[in-house]
Length: 318
Image (cartoon, rainbow, N blue to C red; front, side, top):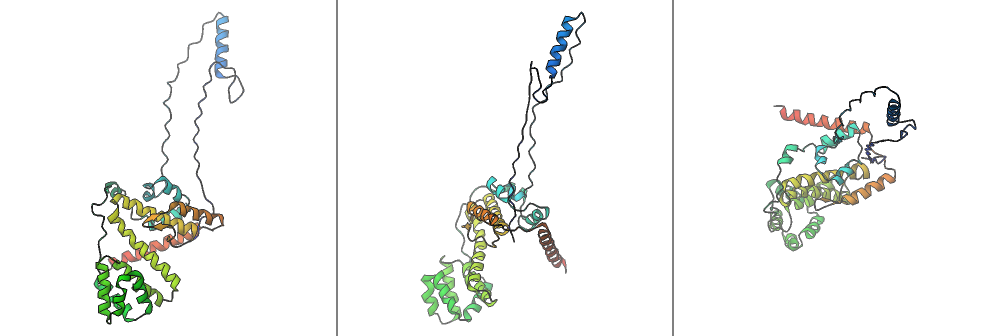
């Protein structure tokens, strides 16, 4: 997707001017005699002439000071709970009706205000990320890769688990090789998800005709997405929700403004380098990056809704 054409900065200036003119000759706005001047002249004339003074007019009570009403936010609820920096960064994105609908329904659709209000802000007592062994599906898929006897498999295992690579290379059967990988997982040397991504997913991608460079990027993105689940074990539930949506804002800035479909350059350890992201976004805008228009967002939104309806209907069909 493309970036936006113009960066919009919103400057809201509220100016309250209260002019109190007491015993002066001219109005500060018109240059004509003020009401105070007329009142003084009328009183002088009334004193010189043998006529009664007019009754003093009843003065209206002084109105209470004006209290500005907070402007309702047009940001998605998931963005409203983020820091001001992330809110301002989100405002750089296209803000048309269909663009906002697209973001709300495809990116922030799982945010629940009530859940966020109830979420605990206490960090987990046990911050240790659990070890996940291979399941039956993982074993089946890994065996398919190992039976293909690709040289790159041994090289990749050496890269991921150097302490186990010799035993892996010396193993003569697929079952023995799987056992070595399983031992590395259970010892905490390599996560099972990493082995599955780096071996099975990579094998599938290569079979599809992707280049090694494309596959490397695709696997890195997959592993980055998997790491988001680690937030459950390292931060509080409330912080997890906040961090999750910060990462989403970061991804939108990269895809919509920078025109890059990944965040490998700006997200590390589940944290967004917002300063670097905005630097890249500004550079893209200055270079004349063309944004998606409302027609494109409308088509994407309607396509998303159509797929969602089809999936919902398929689940309801007996």
